[in-house]
Length: 431
Image 1: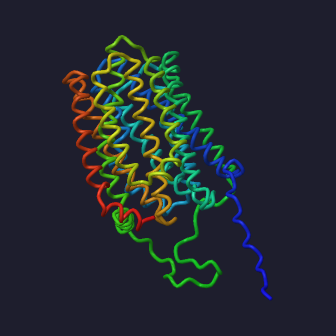
Image 2: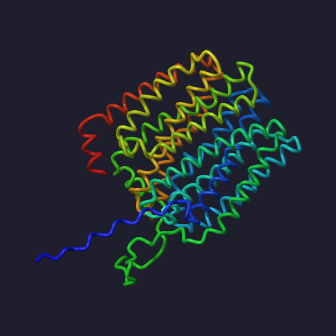
Image 3: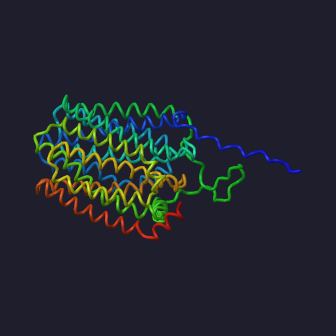
């Protein structure tokens, strides 16, 4: 006589993110903060370019806003891994309120000074980097492992939603009053500050080496704090050890330089065609809507194609789309090309973030995130300077032709780096 075993219980379904109070508060606070940042980003550009007509002056302020990605990322990543994440985010929000508030007051008084805007843009971006690194690392402590992919898609969707709302709001507010985008950002960061106070869960993971049972750990007792350099090297070593991460970073860094040229180029092309700031705002809304759609459908592409094929596909598609920008016959076609580019970017951003947070241990997430942002977004500061120089020294058609040629080269590198059997075998080993 055989004994029938009881069937194994079915795994419990993943708890929906909508039921996670702390995730929603964290998500909402970061989203409101991003909304304010997007409003000031377009506010700086419109304030400077529509006042001076100089793409170079506008690119200088953008350069100052992006420079922290080169100078601050690495030490910020190490420090965020040391600091309390909740306290870090609160200080960053408070700092941005003060810094951006100074711009609002200056514009109200008619005392706009490019060096002042550059300093504030630099300080605001520095606080934003520390806030973003802490928030990205904290997400893993407010959701379960089975919710991580959905949480990353939700965060990328939030970023695009902030663009959908923040950029047109910033454009509209600029049309009403030049100081209005900056007062709006002050309020947004203040709301984010308050929201974070209501997150209950601890945003830190357990220290490395601490046993779950409560027995004494075998690691050394805490002693004198070591310098930042070894900790930064540890983050670099981790990222370099991830096959897809290190290959993808170089491609994203190169393409991000081009995205800076595309971003400023869109504003220049709209003005040259007789458009106005609201026209720019409308196009940015469309771009963000498509970026949001890309983020929301990213899990479908990830599950079907994997990171390797996504990397090849997005770079080839960008090369094809960018080739048509300089020759677009009108605003409608131009907007369509930009929208498709942003849809693909939404997919790629989620794929990169998911791979990073899935593979990085909690105590390394700040440093690993800083390395990734340094190499991908740090290139943006160089791209901002290049954008102003190219657009002031040559025609938009010639500038966009350069962009298309360089993007074609990047697409070829993507095919070479991810298309071979060795890359496919490495993907299977990493999965």
